[in-house]
Image (cartoon, rainbow, N blue to C red; front, side, top):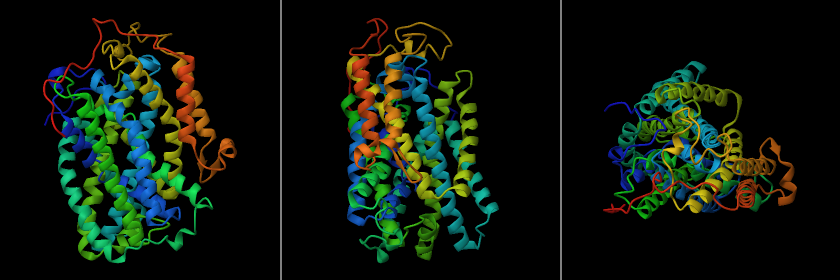
Length: 480
């Protein structure tokens, strides 16, 4: 299979050969990995029981999907990735806001996936072959996972899609075996080792779990969905089918692995750590499948995240090729893995990361969606590429390439979100206004959206009819 040559340029119609089924496959297959499974461990580690943990994950995932899924329709119309598409609202240079947010999201999730997957691999290899849990062992395993991830990401979308189709079936089977393996020790009671509710009360802790474990999953895709839907042709597939496929792919791709993580957390009594107890509680017969899940699943998920990072860096540095950009960010992600392993606990690192990025990313998503509604899905695809061509002008040039109202609105929303966040090591000054409950994502999205509506009450720039790119009526619908 040839290496993908496309960066963030417009995908020609003849290359847009994917469909809604492919979108479901890639969202399901790539998420059936330990990097997503481990988020199901957060609610039990916060001191919640089984039913409270499940409800927090389900509520957060459904709410996040409702906000995130419509973003998939933007790249269906623009034929480029979402950060580039956001130039319609932020300006062709202001779209760098989305590129940086996407880069940070993908960087964190790539590092987390390799970190957790590598820790489980070392533990399994220790039980099977006596591999010592030394710094050298972790370094070699992390390096091998990172190298395999780079290979898939550099070759691009087609390779990752083929891998996701295989993982969607294979990982589902491995997780079903896992349910059988861990079922004898499952309990619905809160884990005593967690030490009670993390925030001192049920509802504050439940809301924290809803955001950190549930909502954070869909929010992680606010800049990623367009990487896949830009290869779907609106001439053959309707917006409704693509939206339904996105809903299905996100909900299944996130709930299945996260609820498996919650189930195994109670079965393995994994209150303070996930990887170690998961391996220790596994029956001997499930160790080989667990090793396969930790390796292949991690490569599939981290590969997609790394692919997105390469596109975001390519958007920030147009002179860099996608392949070179991907290799560069892979080095940074690998460094983050070692920092996370040696300098932080998994619970603190994961909670802080998802809360901060959710607070920063939500107002960008809200502003981008408001712009999509205002322009009714009609974009000037050529004008969106001005920055990539190192040119000037076009309908989205605004003021020197920046749309000031959108940029200011995002800044206000992100700032309020960061001031209202509750981290394990820090509490924002605005928490007193919310009774100590972390509502950072709600406040950031609300402030960003309201500010944008007030500062720019109507769409300032509309593409001319001759240059506009919009979805043509679908000639045939593919059932999901």
